[in-house]
Length: 507
Image (cartoon, rainbow, N blue to C red; front, side, top):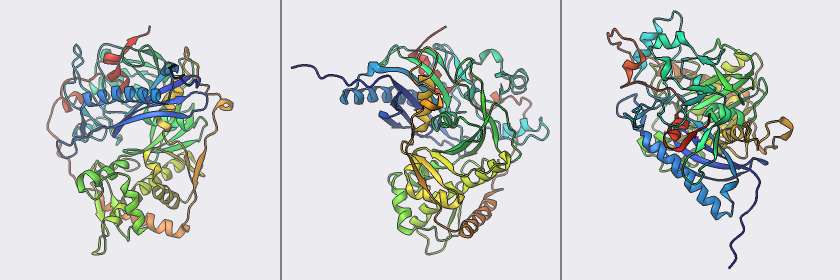
């Protein structure tokens, strides 16, 4: 019997999308941007103390291996030859910290997730040394020795150690935080060959794209022009607006960050970012902590049963409030409850909370940029929830536009990898980019009702503030190392985790 002939689809590009809630490996056709196959593994989160959020680094790494192998098996079942995969891109959760032994590569502690609050007192102590600085110092991302010790500009820009103008580690900042510059990785562009896969089904395939998850989504949404913006609905919610080759500094609680640098000799682009800590995480909380749903998908069914929160408002400030408030004293509240309120109303209020928080950062973005967005491009797993998308259009009172393929974070990493010098299987020229089918949600309520609901939400937000009073320890050493055990290597978490055993260096 003749062997089954493998399908020839042209160059393919894979993407590791390592997020807070799950890890995925996806494979795209570089000519059409079509998603051919993928595999996903949910990642556990641990909460050992109030405000602490951790993950097992070995579980994260194993999930990457598993997703790659399972996706390759699925491609084989589809008669697709995995030898057509010409490059791999990596997108990772930003700012999560991993501590490991420099010699063995073994983690010494759980990964401290970007939502974690244990360093709040350290941040407050350090902020007193900077007059007028009220921003959070973000967690640092970690990696291992052996393999390629590098990161890209988008991840480096999230460490508070990186000069986003010179694109180098900043000596003054490193001295301020007490971090030796020699332990820091080389900073490279978001699109170049870093090394080769050293083992597994894709041995020898170059890893040639690396972006923090939100920058990857900006690329995947093809927001390459000044003023284009996207909002990603994942564990948190992140609205990024491309500000071109100039830094725009916010006066309304947003962050200035590096958007991308797609090649060694390509210019760097910047963005304004508004961050919401809890979006999809509130659905997971309803599932895992309260047990009112068994699967995340059930939230849409519950909300649809009632079609309203019946005056119930849910502020999910589990880790304080991020943009535009930056208020660590806030905690989650559910208010407006009556005897009539049931789990369906709470489910609806949870979805509304995601939309209200998005409106707050969108309004801040509009004030900083001076030109209001006429529509909002959205992506992420939560956008499959049609009630959420309609609520978002109603609360923003502008259209919401969703691509038919919502995995734009992985797509952006794949685009960066495929476009890298030495790979060159994916063109980023505007005329070569594939047209994307969009679903559009128009506002279905009047502007007055939208404003009333939003103003009531703002009252609820005010009620959530001031719940926690921070007690600052009397310490002489204010180094960031005091907050967590051992020392840090600051790198793009997933590139370096894979690099421990999976990458061989390219000079």
